[in-house]
Amino acid sequence: MRRVRYDRPGGPLFVEEVPVPVPGPGELLVRAEAIGVTLPMVRKVSESAEPVPLGGEVAGEVTAVGAGGTGFAVGDRVTGLCFGHGYADVVPLHASMASPVPAAATAVDAVALVRSGLVALGALEAAGTERGEAALVTAAASGVGHLALRLARLRGASRVVAAVSDTRKAGFVRDCGADEVVGYDADGWGEPVGYALDAVGGDVLAPALAALAPGGRLVAYSSGGGTIRAYDLLVGAKTVTGFQLGRIARDRPETYERWRRELWQLFAEGALRPAVHREFDLADAAKAHEAIESRGNLGKVVLRP
Image 1 (tube, rainbow, N blue to C red):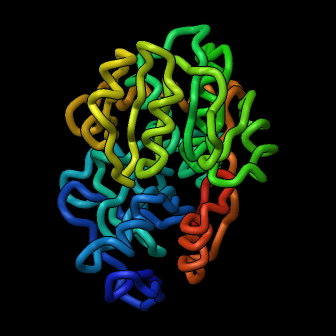
Image 2: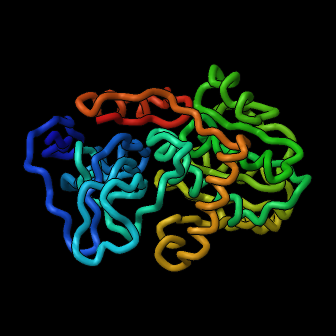
């Protein structure tokens, strides 16, 4: 089977032929039909001191079940997060990280909706949103960001502001529910908002905080770092919360499952549809990474083995 990896920090990515893996205890073997590409994984390629397995979201059909891999059987369609080699034709997926894919959904729907949607929904929960509040979403055209726009609107936001790296994305984010669009380099980001969801970090963190009204809440879920001054929190009685989905999956599995069910229910009702920027062949994984690195994607970037 084919598998994508790299052998030094920064890449390049290449395809190699390797034997089909054997599922370990508690694992499922999944014939991958779609693989989601994420910004954290793209950053790991360039920032990790040593090469790491290319993991991420995967969806496909179970072909084998390891010892103790309860809850699923051969032939089931599943999606989940792979922490090992996920850019491959066949992927080992721990059963605890797997969830069923509804019959009405495709594998691409699954990788575009579930993980990104869980991050977006979880960030909104962490913000403690109330109906009638104005919202701000950075990286608004990304796989997570465009779903956060739609979910903020569904949760009753009175005004939704999309912050993007390039205002040529304005049409796309407006279609996803944004009322206003601002570029990261704008002098001001408009009227203050009640809460902000930041997926960028770095230089974007400070203006996102400044965009909050007094008492506003910023939820940071970026791997991009950045610093803010305690004084800027104090003078506006603002708060910053870090959100990490992995902690929810590990420590609050019932919450994780409730959010997952909510996403699929919204999908079934036609209220929430993920946008896919482009589907790349597994051999073009480097091009998929480039689409994210260049900040050119509109929605989710997907690999198709």
